[in-house]
Amino acid sequence: MKKELHITRLTMLWRCGEQYYRRYVKGEIVPPGIALIVGSGTHKSVEENLKSKAEKKEMLPKDVVKDIARDYIEKNLLADNVLLNEEEKEKAFDVIKGEAKDTAVSLSELHYDKLAPKISPVAVEKPFSLEIEGEDEFTIAGKIDIIEKGRIRDTKTSSRKMPGQADKSLQLTMYALAENINEKKEIKKVCLDFLIKTKELSFETQESTRDKKDFDVLINRISNALKQLKAGIFPPTNPENWWCSPKFCGYFNTCKYVKNK
Image (cartoon, rainbow, N blue to C red):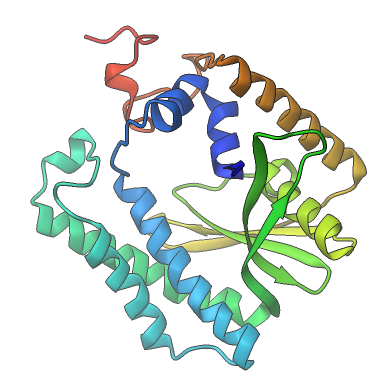
């Protein structure tokens, strides 16, 4: 059976080979941070609401959507399975959990009120698989978050505005390529909806396009990644990159490529 390569794995490999090596080769699982859990809870509520809209042509009741986000945090944010930063360690865990629930529920409500009514999904969390010609070890697989007529869409949570991300997103490129190949549909439009976690919650929608040049770049990157994986070469990231820090990398304090105290 071929090993599945998801875009999240590929993105980690491209970001930092050592992080990929520790996580997927050595199997060292680092607990997620609060921001990731909040983002996943929000994403789950958005997913279930838009599935209802795609299948039943109506949104779920708002209270149900908020409960989905709240219940996800309650189930997944556990004291022995979360990575806390120094500031978070100063707080009681019940306070941390309460704040996380409030944030996830507020972001879910924001999406429900401002974005979901404008979205017309035809499929949500659609699985895909792409075979690579001549490749007998790996296959490309994943799930497309939101498909509208002629457009691929995704939702992200962020603590700040991130201009130009829709233009750069390899994830959206992958989704558009998969739909083009598997369904013989020409998907040119892509869209990112950002739910921004500032004191006053806000949102931003970024639109972009994809064409053959974008797909060629992605295919070249995947080809290079396969060579890395088969050769067992996992170069560390540049330590000047913002994600090379204890706040954004759970392997930072034990990384042999970092000068720690």
